[in-house]
Length: 549
Ligand code: AHR
Image 1: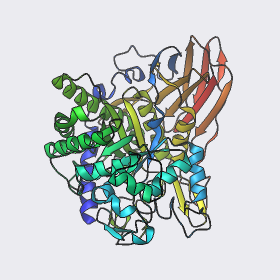
Image 2: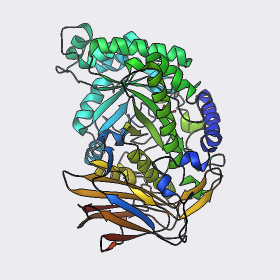
Image 3: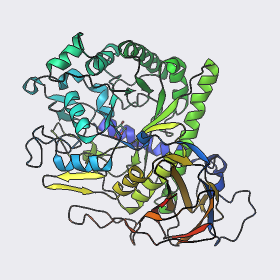
Image 4: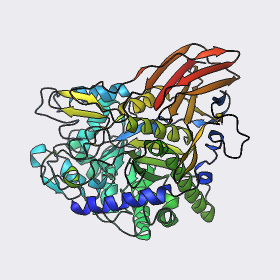
């Protein structure tokens, strides 16, 4: 496990320098130009940020899978998290009812499983069949024991109970393309073949019809079990994809992209992989974790809250590589992105926090989130929303107990700070993404990033339900900032929702003892007149407003 943590930490540091050593010009691409004063005749800094909102002008329909999540066989995510057969809080399947109801209530559309680093050493056959026959296996990724009492069939049953879709991860580390295709057969073929009949024997008469599959995990990382070169991985992914499509041609397949901009092979890995497997896959995966660390931000919260702009950049750079390979191959197919791991994570990522000491359900990666983490998560959601034309799946990593919005103990659960922006996205971000025009005279200097807008704005329109929603991050740590919405075409009528997440202490956290220390409150009502709505956003805050359109 030391192998994992030490090397992962080294790569994190490199992310800090490589990921942020970019000019403001690079950072403020198409979607952000309007949010800076660069090159504009600048009104006074106190002038409001103006948003011109025309509900007819949209970027793309927003895929609900943009707000997916992730459950890995890691720490207490599965065992003690969603599955705890010994608990009085669990149902007859061993599923924790309180956790299940919470996730069902959130409406999480898609959940990645079973890893993560874990998947690269996992034999899916260990996790199916009579529970008494399943082996206790040492998971080398997290130095933990997996009792295998929860496996593919339990996950599918849990997904059904929650009302979510599985995003299945495949072992392309120690696993073979043949084993990957066998799992597809187990899950998706109705009957009459070796693996589909095994599923039926194990109690599931109907196929699961799993649509989305990840071809391995972070195979560019030296910490990954089975790590290989880009060419080797690209060829293995192509072989797996071909065999899987032979079993079920309808599958949507995601190839492993770079683990993040800090990797020395960033983008070069993606290009070489896609040169091998472009024709056989639908999407490329991206991963990214952020931290308010000495290396990444110097502990400067103003810079920390600007880091979502580097995620905009990562998305745009990865798309450029996809499109480069597309051009070289003269392919009619355009890939989309699966940002299938993203979050804040920097405290619980070394020593005992990543070493299970060969125990069952150890306390690993139990990051405690504060207010500023939640604000950045809000900014990251804005970034995902404005790239919804090409990012079709994204997974907040993870969902329960492990770098998670939901924490459990034997008696119940509580919501961490990051729960709230994520839950707002799930609740309110429906329909199509608005192509907003933003005039933002109010900026601040961020070391290594240039001028950054105080306000970060994303919006959606739901034409069916006739709703317009804005998601607003105020990065100014000390001052309230004004936003003026100029309605063009449809005007926002009745205010349907207005919530703000803020507080006097950026470092405040929730806990079992104080579960509501950081929680949303009602936002001040905006004032509207003559086709304009004025909104005052408190310092260091994330706000959502929804109007009837
Ligand atoms: O989400 C925690 C870990 O972070 C995952 O197992 C791995 O894919 C990433 O490095």
